[in-house]
Length: 306
Picture 1 (cartoon, helix red, strand yellow):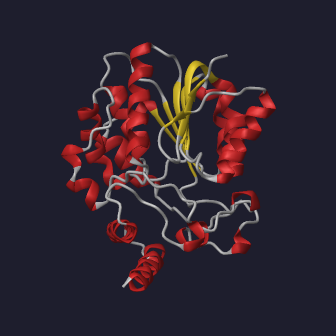
Picture 2: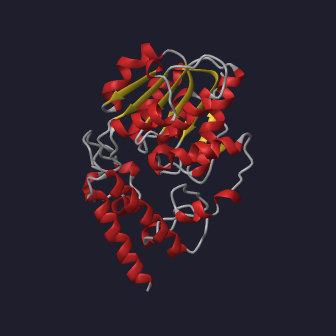
């Protein structure tokens, strides 16, 4: 029975990458997560189920799976104003693959930044479907102070080719990559593709954030960020969600200097080896050793202190 479930999981993965219909992709995605939970037998965990990925962390709460939805009223992580944040998550489920705690932390940080009066724009590199940006927008709108500018970067073509340093065995299965794809070429792999229209729906229709304060940048980070830095100015929240070594390192080098003292840096993919190596390299380059606060098994954040 276990081998049949594994085969079904692989078939669902195959059709997920072939499908061009967003609603069908969402259904397939949810079925894969539900099947994975049945395979590992843990109500509130998701782990990759391939033998080569036995290092993958458990204890991650995904918002889209049926078990999470079924236990939603009992799910309480202890954040301030968590009921409001959970309502926002429900409205944004179809727009995100970010973990439950990842969304809660983004909401909580945005809420704090507004209340504390920390000046600067909100910047996200790696917008994908727009859920993380939108939940920060909802938190920002809950305050009675002037809303900041928000700058959102994504290729909207999916991930570029990873470097060799990014390689983790599960990527060949879950992202449908070949071993030869890890060559660092700045061209799409077809993995994790989302449209700008999807992200705009999350930010403008669900979060109802003002269009005049929102800036989308379509293209590779290397092509879009350098020309936008002056317009961005100071940054209060820098949310990094580029998954890969080169994407993370480039964004840190270009944008971290503009983060204001007291501002936040959220690292969505710290659990991925390439992202972690990029962070460690950049911290070494500029001579800092920040305390990285735990979000969950994959995410971290820290505050710029000087």
